[in-house]
Image (cartoon, rainbow, N blue to C red; front, side):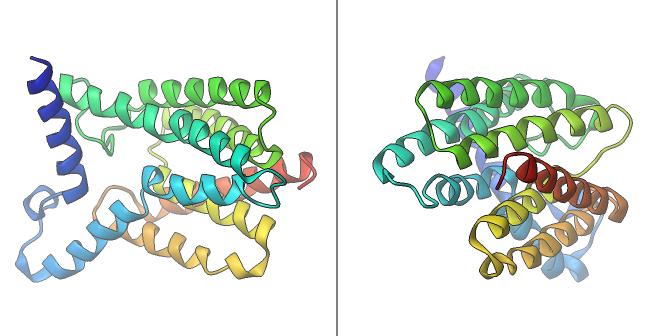
Length: 225
């Protein structure tokens, strides 16, 4: 039984990586190339995909103890990414959730609450371990942004892909300077992909991005970064 469940979870994750099929979004072969590009962009720049480089970049920034920072980064990754991903994958496996993208707005409440709770626990753990200040700031941004997005989701399906990329680009640009500005081009790409795949409207990706930029900037200033 455990082996069957593991194989099913593995299949769920593989299907997510493959992305939506053309028939699912009502397209014919004439638009297949554009949609394949959009599908791969959406997968590569998904919140779970960008979490590794983001967390590592934040944790190691001007760190006096890279070893400790790396250990804290791995802990943060568990609470920010792996835990929520497993929660969603199990939800898809058991039929509570339709897909790993949580396409249906009505299904997003549980994953939001779990992700916010997980990040909060992660923040307390990092505080106990005297983790990097910048890394704890990232968790605070995640928690506050998650709460705001949660309330918006009760009425409107805002884009988490656009929100996550916007927050990451804003945070890394604030830390590393103008060398990180090209990350905002990735924000444009992932926003386009979500609209092309008909997962969101232009308004949903735009508001998601702008709101995250605003919240991230405000929290960075309050934290003195």
